[in-house]
Length: 252
Ligand code: 13P
Image 1: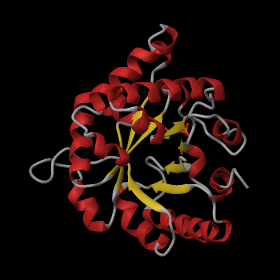
Image 2 (image 1 turned 90 degrees about the vertical axis):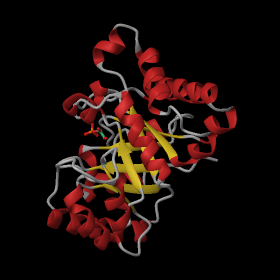
Image 3 (image 1 turned 180 degrees about the horizontal axis):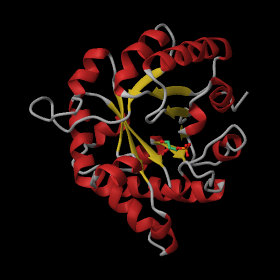
Image 4 (image 1 turned 60 degrees about the vertical axis):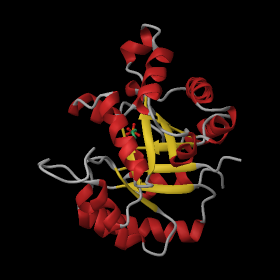
């Protein structure tokens, strides 16, 4: 049985004080509503300490949106996974399409981060997804296969329980365009098939695959009803309690 896993990627939104205030109200709501799913939020690096403090005593997972592919050294502006661990952050989102698109992160760079995070026993949400042009030219499967093969290169079978995949079609992010539940299920099923061929049927069966791209209260139920959709990675609609709470309590 795969337990649903719903995450809020705050991206570059909410200051530390805004984030802490919102996170405290979310923690309270989660305690009261007891959603069936695992809930994660990923604030910006500078907001992490305040947010961790605000959700203390709740089950909310606080994750980072990125990390360096080095432990320490002369890498100006970067944040080391050891610094995250020191704060108590054990989960990291890697390979988000905005990192790929705006900051030149290649599958190889992302793979080095995945391997480093796993070596420190961190949990990883690895993002994959095609652009509109790639989808239109019939390259969806080729792109997903490459992102998975290279992104997971040298990841051991026993480490796969620390990996969640987030399928985020680039054309559906922040655009209001959502993949239909059928589109999402099709892509997720291909991801599961690819992981089965790289690892085993068992590992693929247990793999949590989140969908991301304009997930809202109004479409989460239909997406989550699909066999291969195990969760969501939510951007815009994760920024307020009014929008995020109905998403994480979609099954109620
Ligand atoms: P939106 O929900 O704003 O489309 O963002 C999705 C996303 O990129 C989450 O990582």
